[in-house]
Every structure is written in C-alpha cells, then in structure tokens.
Image 1 (tube, rainbow, N blue to C red):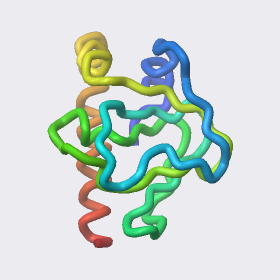
Image 2 (image 1 turned 90 degrees about the vertical axis):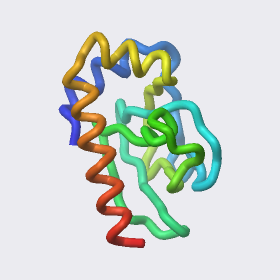
Image 3 (image 1 turned 120 degrees about the vertical axis):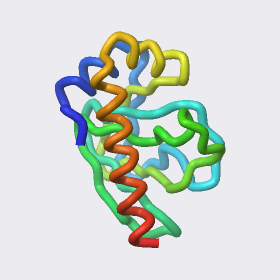
Length: 122
C-alpha cells in the first residue's frame, strides 16, 4: 500500500476531486480509461466478474493500468461508502512522478501486488 500521506498530498494538489456515493460505479471492467484514482476519503470495492476481490481505502490508488499500457479496465471499481477521489491523467501522473520519484515506485508496487492478487483469484 502507498503511504497515505504521500498519496493524499499528490492527489489533493489536483483540482476538482470527485465525490462518489456509496454503491456508485467509478468505472467498469472492460471500459477504456485515461485516469488513475487516489482515495482521499472513503473505501472502494474492486470487483472481478461481479465478485468483490478487494476493498481499498484512504491513501491507496487504483486504475493505474490504463496509464501504463493496459487498454481497458481489468476490474470494476465501486464506492463502498461515500468517497472522495482525486485523479491523474497521464500528463499529471508523469509530472507527479517527476516531482516525487518515490511515488512512481509506490504506484508500481501497489499495481503489481494488486495484479498478483487478482491473478490468483481468477
């Protein structure tokens, strides 16, 4: 998991965080995308084939795959509780990595751990 302090500070710098109500779909498996998300407040369920495989919370990131070469979302993300999310597109992600190189390593670690867990479930 990423350092919540680092993640929140990076995502809070972005304008217009998005609010999601409990049960609201953030994105669906198979959809194209161009943003990754950071949880500023709340919890998000990760679903594969309609089944919750992970719940992530404040300070974690998700949806990174579309910024590193994956064409479509590989899972569905739904707000478990009322949540506030920051987001980064590719350009803002690259800037954040340039400003905070450890962020890139933390994102890669989080992404690879999630991918490994999902591969073992599916």
